[in-house]
Image (cartoon, rainbow, N blue to C red):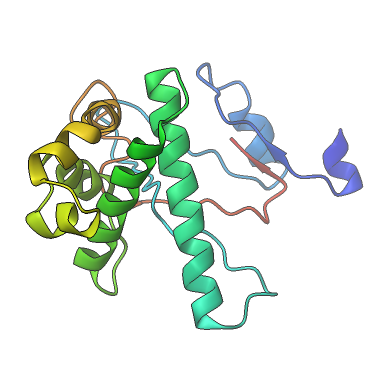
Length: 173
C-alpha cells in the first residue's frame, strides 16, 4: 500500500515466491536465487553511484566502504558474532588484494576467500606479521565466507552478477 505514496518496498527473502507476482504487477523486479539456477549476485558490485558523488576518488572510497562493510557483515552473520579487530584487518587485506587483482574490473568473493586462506608474504608484511600468523588470524573469517563460495551457498554469490538490483524500482524481491 505504501508504494502508492512513493515508498519503495524491498523483500529480502521470499522463499515461497508469493511476493513475485506483486512485485511484477507494480512494475518491480523479482531476483530469484537458488541452487542450480544461473542467477548470481556479486556482493562486491559497486552498487548505484549517488548523483551527489562527482569525484572519482570519493566514489572509490564509497565503493571500498560498501564492500568492506558488506563483507564484515556477511562474515559476522555467518560466524554468529562480531568480528575481532584482527579479523577486520585480515579481511581488509584480502579485499585490497582482490580489488587490486581485479584491476579495472570488479573483484569477486572467491578472490577474497582465497586470499584469506592463502595470504602472500606481501599481505603479511603490510601488517607486520608472518604469513602463517596472518592466515591464522583470518582463518575463522575465511571459513565463514567459504560457505558462500564452496559450501552450501555456492552458486549464489561466487561469480559476476547476472542480474542487476535496481533500487529505483517500486518493489524488489
